[in-house]
Image (tube, rainbow over all chains, first blue to last red; front, side, top):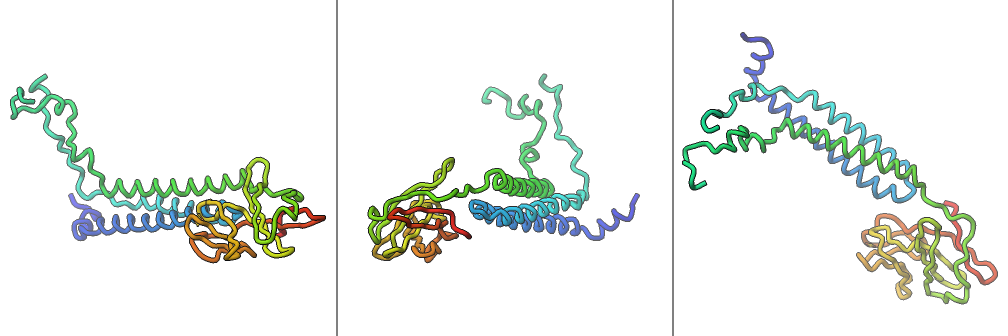
Amino acid sequence: MSNFRRSQNEAHPNKTNTILTGIILLQILFISMQIWFLFGALNNALEENFGFALTTFIGSLLMAIASIWLLRYIPEPLQKRPTKKPEVSPSRDP
Amino acid sequence: MAHEDPGKEPSWKADFPIESKRATHVSRREFAKFLGLLSGAFAVSNGFIVLRAMAFPPEKLEGEQFVANVEDVPVGEMFQFEVGEEKIIPYILIHLEEDQWRAFAQKCTHLTCAVRYSKEEKKIECPCHNGWFSADTGAVLQGPPPRPLPQLEVVVRDGKVYVKEGES
Ligand code: FES
């Protein structure tokens, strides 16, 4: 039985691939900015630069929320995972 | 293994029926989830910096602290001293010219090497990575240090040198 989703997926098999790549790229972008922020905050918080630490923390938190929220949009795998378990015959040599 | 017949499945395989390829395989889906976790970890560590800054505000020097007698530090010389009770921070006192005194933190802002006043250059030098600071303002002139040296205000009274926290 076919439904809309499935026929869409069959018509555009690259779509999941693109979405997943896009999500990973966005996350890498966020994380790079977070590394940059953290570096700056470490450098500045050594001095009396409290505002900088707070600002980078808020920014970093927002980006973390964004990159976790992005996980919602990870597409489901098109084919089900191979349900076929590796064949094992326990009775062969107990 | 030699005594076993090669066509037969070893019993450990029967006990753990997971292919090693499946056990070590990281899908992009898992990778994305891991990136999300990593992102969260970065936010948390950034939060720690904020907490630390709130919990331990930088100590301010209270009042004036006696450093040295004027005659002990000739022009062009530097003198080491320390400030702070809990956290001791080394400072240097520099006698730039007649009646020209400066006090800077001795820890280089790059990687906390000890800086020293170079009499010939009339600048503060960090020997570790060839960083140079202005002996007048503490500003970075050259090299890797990212920030100017912290400075204290110098007061000379009755032939004695004191330092105190500057206005800025
Ligand atoms: S520690 Fe002073 S220049 Fe690197």
